[in-house]
Length: 191
Image 1 (cartoon, rainbow, N blue to C red):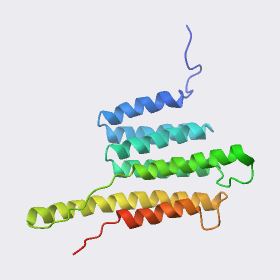
Image 2: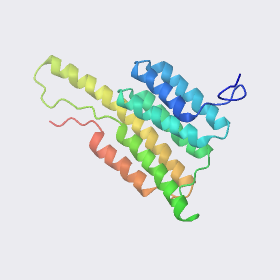
Image 3: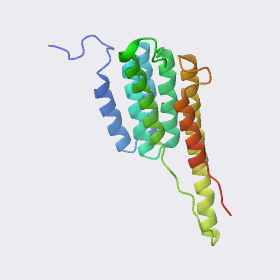
Image 4: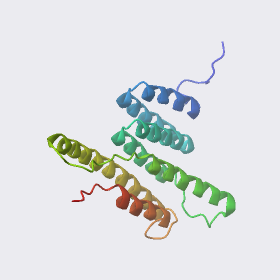
C-alpha cells in the first residue's frame, strides 16, 4: 500500500490546499476557512516553506475580499506581509541581479493585487429621507472597516519594504498605493 504523501504530518502541495480552502469560502464558510488559512499557512511557514505559505495567504486574502469579507481578507493580507518578513524576502532588487529583481517585482505585484482586491463600497450621494440616512450610516461603517483593513495591510507592507532593502522610508510604490487609497476610498460626505 503506497501513500501519496509519505510520512504522517507531511504537508500537501500548496495548490491542493488552496483549492480545498477556496471551496470552503465559496460555500460561505468564511470563518472556518479563515482559521484554516491561518493555521495551514503557519504550518507551511514553520516547515520553512514560505513560498507556499505566501501562495496560500494571497489566495485566501483575495477570495475573502472577493466575497466581501473585508476583515478576514485584510487579516490574511497582513499575515502575507508578516510571512515575507519571516521568510526574509528582501525588497532590494539591486543586490542580486535580474532574477532577484523579478522576484522582488513579483512580491510587489502580489501586494498590489491584494491591494486592488479591497472592494469599493459606494457612499449614497442623495440624502432625502431617514432610509437614506440609515444607508449612509451603514455605508460609512463599512467604509471604515475597509479603510482600516487596507491601511493596516499597506502599513505592514511599507514597514517590510523599509526593513528589507527599499529606501529607509519604504517603497515609493507602496507609498503611492497608500496615498491613492486614502484619496480615493476614505469616506467623505460632501454637502
